[in-house]
Amino acid sequence: MQIDGWLDRAAALAPDRTAIETPTGSWSYAELSTAAHVGARALAARGAAPGAQIAIALPPGLAFAQALHSCLLLGAVAVPVDIRLSLSEQALVARDAAIFVEDPLPAKDEHPTKDERPAEDEHPMENEGETTSDRVSHDLDATALIVHTSGTTAAPRPVQLTYGNLLWSALGSAVALGLDPRERWLCALPLSHVGGLSILMRSAIYATTAVVHERFETDRVLQALDSGDITLISLVATTLARLLDGGLNAPPSLRCALTGGGPVPASLVERAQQANVPVGLTYGLTETCSQVTTTPIAEVRKAGKTAGPALFCTQVQIAEDDEILISGPTVAPSAHLHDGWLATGDLGRLDERGRLQVIGRKADTIVSGGENVAPAEVEAVLEAHPLVLEAAVLGRQDEQWGEAVSAIVVPRPGQSPDIESLRAHCARSLAPYKVPKTFTLSFQPLPRTPSGKLLRRELA
Image (cartoon, rainbow, N blue to C red; front, side, top):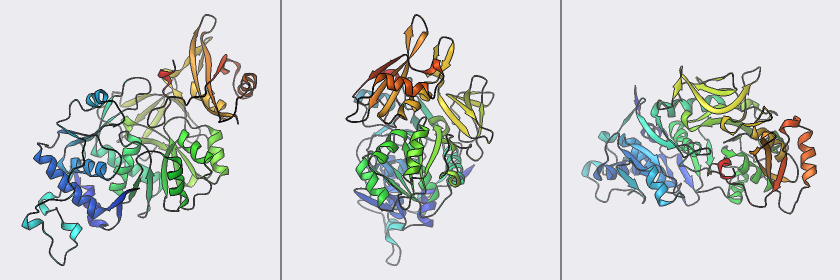
């Protein structure tokens, strides 16, 4: 099925509306459309063709957004590359790319043709660099992006996402969160991963504004939220905690702080609610084009431990071993399915209303004395301790238990919690077999992916 190109549609619908805003500048939809069409011609001049992979190794910002949309206008496949990777790691991600974009594309034609010069009575940015022949459509079955997984348990894997995946994901998110033409969604997540990248995609589909920061900086994000200009923000547990530690309270225009990227401690949600921060929990993964379940906007002010119901037209079920299974139009065609279901490798449970509670990773499960222990559950309890900043729980080989539950605890600045107090704290909330046998205090931050997920394999 073919649909109108969503950037051209957004530029026609709201040419003067801000498409992307960064701390260093912004573009309206007319300006972004013009720049993307010019960039597409520049890529075509370098040999880019429909279906070709184009690696984008640019920092989050205007140039990245232009290159991304230039690829989509061409029908080429955009492959975002995390520029924080080593050169050899970047080369591995981009190994099948026909073109490697590491410098901004030209945003204006140096010598526009006669047909491309706007008439005096025409809106200059609606016509500059764009002709009728430039207008495109998207094949919903075609691959739009190749996004790499976060690589928490193994090397990052490439996932092919189609235009249909992107469109259904945007529709499902809009049903859950509502849609306001004046939406301003703040993204301080990496654009090389699906959580951040999907904000740019959804905003273009909606013709709303994406506010993009190159990296998460607590003071800058606090300032943006306090200004009253932000209506939505995507966070992970660690960045939400940093904002609360920094004094975030009752951001005036924020409808929802969508928080996911892994289990979110209930104590952190309670802290946010006490600070009048509307938190909505979400669960998703690269293979499902970001969100799978999301707290409906009507429920974000209520206490809860679940990541909400499945998105519109997405189905979730729990296997006998508690693994989360997904089906629906957001699931990447390249994902390995069993009887039509994607096995996520995550563990969870559904409550009586069909809301999902994420327990942890199946591969992380600790088998201690014949009992299964989900590390994320124990970590959530530890992180509820007032002196604990963050925690990691691992299974250590043990002659008596097979695997002994072991905790690495990072105290809050200036604190040094007593080990026995930590043990007693866990014993009040957990079954005896889940209480860590050993505790180690660490005064260094725990290793995490750029999207905030704990890199447990680096602690093993």
